[in-house]
Image (cartoon, rainbow over all chains, first blue to last red; front, side, top):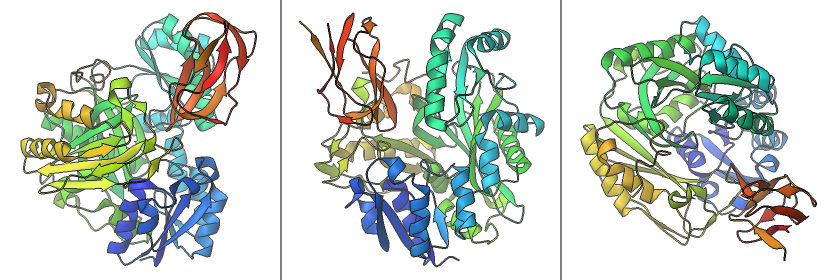
Length: 448
Length: 71
């Protein structure tokens, strides 16, 4: 095992990784920007190094600076968390070149799955169904209209250079497509440095269900079952749970088989997630692979009783995966609510500010992953995730009851949060019945 | 009487989309703010001519700050 690991992230995920380091007797080094001095993840670390000003590109995205800190701190490995540099293959490659292990898949795999059009083709080759769409990039509006006509409206425009729901735009007809195309190109270029777009059929009232996979260097590759993540705004998740309620066992079996087949096809190592859309008829379609730890990984940890982050460190250190597929069971149900500094009454607009009071839920069946503390200022520079609440129970009903209680105990003052939204979802009949799909939030299904 | 176009949210100016002399319709984006990884357009409250854009790319503006003038 490594003696020292650098955590190239902030907030709750940096704390989560530092906790795994402590559990394994590994020295944890944090990095932080000027905006984050005094934040909990800085205090949690055995050593913390300031790396630059608040803007991410001058701090958490500054590859040279982070590698320099790793070298000085004698870190043998770097955990990228999620977001920031986690799916940046140049960073993963640079880590290897400077002698620090990148805690994640090989850089070649990050690159392969990051090129979304090529990844689609790879999955087709591996026998994994994809959403019907363009074979290659659509270079101009004319090509987009032609392809959209063939694929059939409504369609979704997506950036070829990267995923995570960034730069996506839906169009229901040629006029909307004409309007959305230049904006989507600009966004794609701003986010990923390439303006290339591709196009997929938009599946109405589909569910977002993903499969956690994990591989090691010996070629073992397992799945850790599914997570249902349909409650989203702006194509970003708000609530995740496992098992996926009402998912027919036959569909589930085919879904995890496809996920494992797809991950094997690219020689996947470490933790990753295969994302799918499941249509109302039970057909499923590959969306993309996230070649990193997911925000919602605690759901899987609570369901299976396994520690994904510790396993990430072990596998990166060259150890074999400590699990056998047959022993990985959905032992209970778990659900996660993401508490963002956003105003649900103003269409989830960001709500930066200083946290003046914070009361976290506790008790039986509740786990909280919190990145903030009273007195810290939530800045405009980073993702607005403050904390995650995870509730587990022997079955879904028990998990939901515990979550409702936890949400009623949880309070944050100083910024608006998604807490009232979560309370509304948890008390809705629709959600209790598990009848969810990705359009519910935009349709106003949980509005008071 | 020129009308002040105000930021409805705190953020970093990601993009300036208009310049003095530009004709805009109500709802047209004047600038785009980036806040917490989201791109949020600041839109023209009515149709008119942009007379001044005070926001500069990369600058932080607070909620309520004037970012442009419209005539």
